[in-house]
Length: 332
Image (cartoon, rainbow, N blue to C red; front, side, top):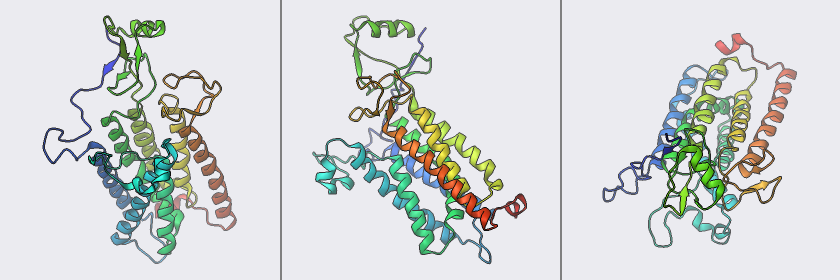
């Protein structure tokens, strides 16, 4: 009995891999389109509920287009810049910053903007929304709350795009849903621990010199928990918020918390490894200690700490000014 799953061989990064001129259309990019469309639909829904209405002012659809468009533009800029300058270890982008938005490789093959960082997108998108609210004289807390509800379900598609790219896979696992991804590190079958591992999951390695071991399908974990589950929580608490900015803080803390946990199952970037490690020589392909922290975990910890601090500040400020909302206010 096999206690693992092979990554589906029919999945390719390209939507039409064998069709001329359509090979540049990739699932990852298509998933971004689905994510933004989903976020737009939810934002429009909450605006119709009156979540964005201010005293004497009803939101127009042009406002929504302008708001989400500005947020998306800043999100893409932040995600790409952060990915290239923080996660790339070659230093090429620091020496040649014009390559950050250059969509071709050295052989002039179109690659798109391969490499986007969630945390960079979070920072960029947040700055974009704040910029829009200041420019258009809108209450930032109220508008960013609405966007916080809209983001997670769309984010689900982003992680599905990672899965279709067979990237951001997890550490090796003996769980029956462990998946053999095609591009992961291979291990020598002469190693005793590899032989024991393969025997445990029923993997035949006879005649093989190296083997590709099953991994946690971490993009699917993230799609489900950081996307669907977090969205359900925020959607069902949207009418019970006590102050503007509360849902944005809930989203930031919730994402940071869930992602922090999932990072224990996801393999860190090979070029970076652990930022903080109890054992400096610990392998990244398996979890040997809860005290080994990746870059993502450090950034998620900062998200949790920042959201708690800001949430308390906003709560006490609203309480002092008598601006705390009640259920009757929220249902109007």
